[in-house]
Length: 284
Image 1 (cartoon, rainbow, N blue to C red):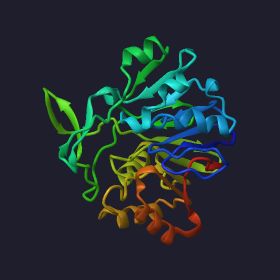
Image 2: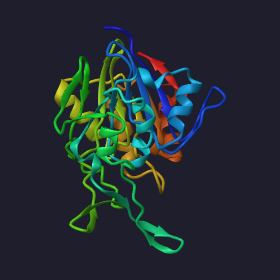
Image 3: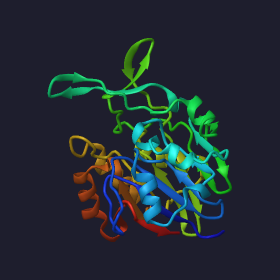
Image 4: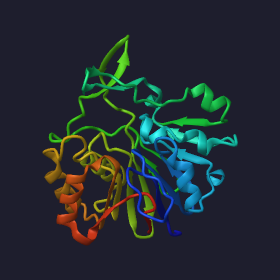
């Protein structure tokens, strides 16, 4: 097995070197025996800029894995798809469902569109994308498992009721069945990549454990949704306990984790903790 390097290209904050942009969203590049694979594409302008600063040529990427169909994980798609070259996009089939948020703004209730900004026809036609959809756990490359739909089994990880989907001309709570994660087998052990973990980070770890038989994970990297918008939820302590139960040696949080939840994770895990800002990179 060859070494695997994971580099964060899009995230809310930027570390170094100079010239990197922070932007609400997430994207990470996986470099290893399967070639360069991009996990999510960020929100908009940061992907192309940060790739250039870090010396990464997006034209070398022929596979993109999307964690779910929200704008802050899919906005950079055209930058990685051009010039058109039959790039494969792997995701759950629900990524193009019309997604919205619903919350109280200064002028009252607002419902902004938060789904993919580009029509599938445009991405396939003008950009030459080739979509491959999976709703079940699928080995998309040797040693790389796409989660498919993650069963919601814990009693402490609850959906974000502000997230909606349009059905029959009405907005209903989005079950986010398209929320998917990726498990990468590395020389150091299995590494889990999360987009937002809307299914619950413990549900994700439990799901991968059931699918693979792994009882330990070397690293968990990405958005955990443990304290986004309103501070840490009641699931934080149980999620941190689960990191210990699974022997996670590196907890690299990002994006929707929330600052307070990240600080509490740092306090508990010390050297096992990292904030995965733009430019953060690890080899496994």
